[in-house]
Amino acid sequence: MRRRRRPEALLAALLLLTGAPALAAQDVSRPDVAAPATPDQPQLALFGTIPIYWGEGDGMEDVLAGTATAHWARALLEQHLALHPLATLLAEDLAGHHALLIAQPRVLNPAENVALDQWVRAGGRVLLFADPLLSAESRYPLGDRRRPQDVVLLSPLLRHWGLDLRFDADQAPVRQVREIAGILLPHQVSGTFATLPESTGCVLQGAEILADCVVGEGHVVILADAAVLDLYHPPAGAEEALLALVQRALAPTGSIKQNNDLADPPDLQPVDKAVHNNP
Image (cartoon, one colour):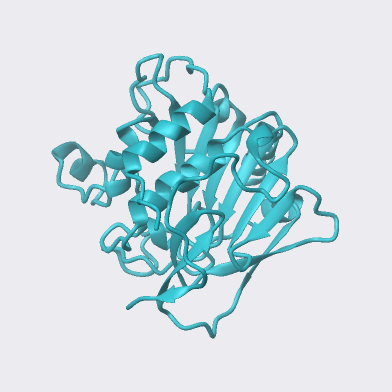
């Protein structure tokens, strides 16, 4: 049995893989942009409706007062990365960034779809959580625009990358842990991917829950589930899984083997089949 690697050790390996250049200074007058980090700190832009950066609260008043419910993933990622939240995915927002984590995004407008695709093809790295039916808890009721997007709607972009996102409404609502390319991944009520006939750059893994795609000069890792980012009830192993996914997404495309595994995957104890846990 192999020892489980601490989250800090996973990010140490990540820093060796990214080689991310320092970014230009950010416009700190904008509420959606954080202050610039030190030049030697790897950068990760954030976008999406899961409140990784700001936490879940009643608007900026809660954020400024420190009364918003902080997301555990922010503290974890900021141990090693400088996070830069984005409000839109237009070309000017993506310019200068090397890596991007997208967590259950809202519907993208046509300009954002085009800008994100062009940015990826020019060498961008993306970790995308695209859950067709989000199972994570929120303090806000259905229909509240502050609530994370319950159903992700990214078909135009995914199809452009050669993927079709599907969902089985009859699956049991239980958490599972599945080994996917060396990552012990908690998931619940997941979607699945299918590759379209014209797809040439995507490999599917973990019962088609994860798609690993080379798009132009860029690299996109897409998960048809977001249970690992549950704010209030994170599953066991969520920290290790998130860091391993970030490491995988930010890895240079040249470090991916033909079977789409990293040359040096995270040292996590594998399991041979899905293990059911309590919901």
